[in-house]
Length: 446
Image (cartoon, rainbow, N blue to C red; front, side, top):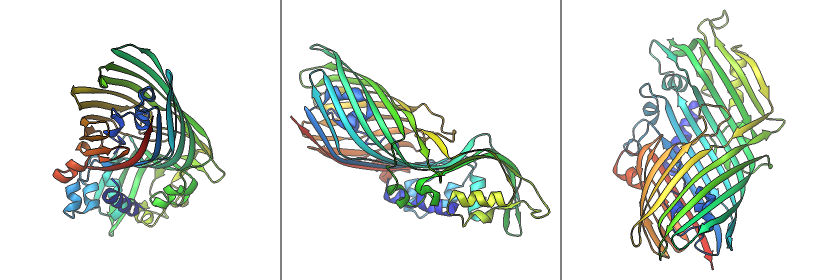
């Protein structure tokens, strides 16, 4: 099972490309629906009276072990992932915006948006335990003990958003706006394996790795297409929009220090993704277990880890542990609520000289990634210098990401078409641990 996860991540890193979607274009002074996705109060700053979003997509990968140069040089990916004692973290994240519309009307502005989202996350995976399961690569005996929750987590869902913004105050020099977005959530598929406070011993006996004297609290959950596994891309693309079963909200405020052309300063604060969605289906399962692996007459060496290498989904993992008698059920539900990744964001876009702007941005998560019911994200701080004309724009976004570290990229806009990456420069010139790409087209109508 682990080997399939690794192959999937490797392919994704090569072909997709981390958590700050549409970096650079989403703070453009050509204001549109992407700006409102960062802060709904930006709708009152729409550059056109009417805005139509036709299509936009962003795909991101970030990790803390594998650099771009490692892939180019043909290094063994599995060896790099499990090297050292630090936990393995990886985030694979995609957003696709469909048809959207926004308009200004007197002091009000309104917006409508559609979005599909998918995430696959590896959170604080212990490298010794993962290596033993994946390859039996254990010599002698190794003790594993940690006080955090290791998670493999996959989620897909759809959103329909309704936004409103109002200009609160405006004169020749200053402008204040406030806005909110209500998101209707359509849960698609979900899966989670959480292994909390794991402690145990891995022994190599006759070229086989065994786990013994082990305890942990385990959550195993699955819903929708992910019952059959969550490393197949088709399981995400075919199960994004389910039935309406959740709501979330965004709130934001915005300030502009105006000048003749546009502004000297555009700044904002927002809290986004407050809420969650409930997965309900007769085939769903979310079960908490107490894991206790000890030697028995039937299994004197403990649990043989090679049993998991052919498992394709969490139901098979669950069955193996149940059949060996190592799991004690503590709680089980067919309906379970999952929280969106709530974030606080702040930004300031500053005019340095005419046509040259510098945008500062930070995103800080408010949820706890170690909780089994939490969809994850990562903290980001970025700076984006941007040369901007009415119909043309070029920019370079540089960020410090919680998982992947320093990244730098490039993007451009020509009329309504835009394309970019916040990591292409560092991927080509240094050992970047992130890859991302976005593209889209929108129309502004007077």
